[in-house]
Image (cartoon, rainbow, N blue to C red; front, side, top):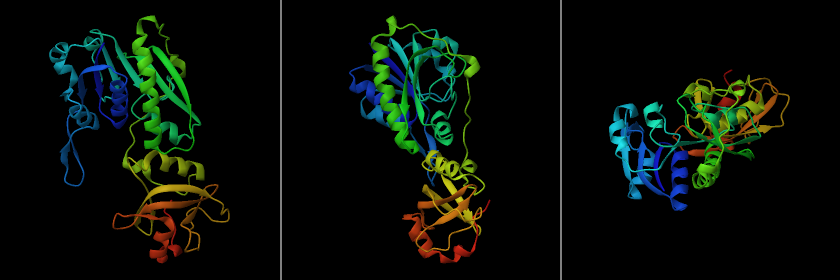
Length: 301
């Protein structure tokens, strides 16, 4: 059995690694083109590209997949597997061979580009992985397998890894038993949709509840980043937890040099870890010790 793999993210890379470890023959990998990254905007390949190249797998990068169908037709494969690829696939490709998608949500909930972040942001206690047939309508294909996963306060990267590993194990079973699986249609009436998040979504406003603030940091701090503003100073927050100081107004800072705590909608939260002005990871306590002057200010709402 030969696999054509399409993916571009860290999630994709973990799924691909699972396929290889399970002994599948991945004949080709298609991923997004190199993109500018870092302060120097240096062109950087996707994690999938780097990993596949190291494993000696043929890698193709298409800016527009639909313009390269002739080239794809030359690839020797039995099944196409898609995991967070990042482009709409044309029907002409979907008609070539069976095409299977690994999606980190319990479809039809959280279709679209950011299912994991949306689930964390909403404070879901249960999430999961769906293996489905790819359809032209985004994440609307028939379900081949689905498993739930109980969350435990994970931040994005940890949850991404756990669901990718789960998805890889599920994918192995689906591929080996594909011809005997009866697909199940999704209930369109239950479908929910996600959007692409931007840097501005990472702002930590005291008008939110403690749960909302903690979930926002879990969802965004490792990607877009999360930040709060005190006296025109933007502070990048890496870890946040609920606190027990209920007498603080929204945005009011606790007058305590040992705790970086501020009031929010229904209580308070404590900054556990953040970045110093020089970009070094430090504890919230160390930040306050070095910036006592902000204790007389307020977190911007």
